Length: 344
Image (tube, rainbow, N blue to C red; front, side, top):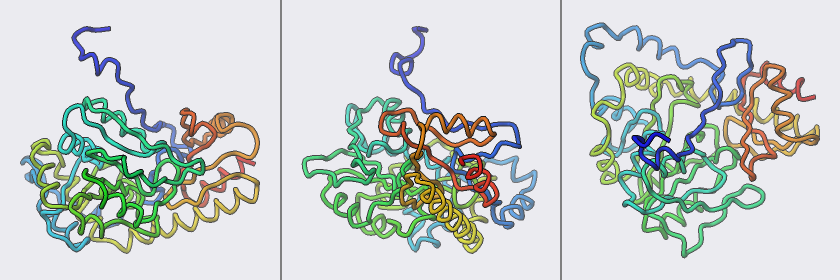
């Protein structure tokens, strides 16, 4: 081991993103990207960017973008923070709200980046196991951490926890509750109202999924002004580049386009769920742009490899609670038909 590297970093088990193949013939259903293009207004915004604009640093606090987001959510710009993807915001939350040697909470299984971020920040973890059916249990009264990440809908299990359950925990908790709503545009309920009414709740959103903009890396948080102000204190000076700010403003302004794409994905998702269940596959009630399924025959890993051999990528997680299931992104109807044919 190279002794020049911090011991904790040397021992760190890094987060492993989904595979990004270079072969365009691969049907890519492994990273929850949107199969449809972003709003045409995005490309109009790109064309308006001039060489002189690129010569200068971007707005360090994303004023115009935050105003657009605030108008969309019915809040003040001071209640909005923008980041380099929601992942940056999650990392900043740990640095802003958790004292050294404190702990973060989250459900297990959930977003596998959470414990990695905790390790990087040198804080502990206090995960709460999901129920056997992958639903979220009610955190017990004796459980309290300075920061709890509640992914809703949850990944990789696709299930949505009721807003009132989250409200109940937040009202009992002394810490900050971050509701990670990366997939909420495919769900029947959100927690914006909690973020704008409770002093210890933030929601985080991303433009990677429903807005078809995973490539620009834009996430945002809304909530209590003091919590938001703390994130500004510790962010990088220019954490969101100019192109991302311009593209994000254009995408958020075109809600009909995003919502129509989301409706198409939901319709395809529900059809695929019905089809798989008719084949005896155990599929959970998805509220996201992916499904969580347990094969009727064979193992999940065997099916993962068989699909891969047919140029279809899905996501397989090796942890004990997840090793019997596959997470499958909802693609176009044609892509999902190819998946179903290969599955058969």
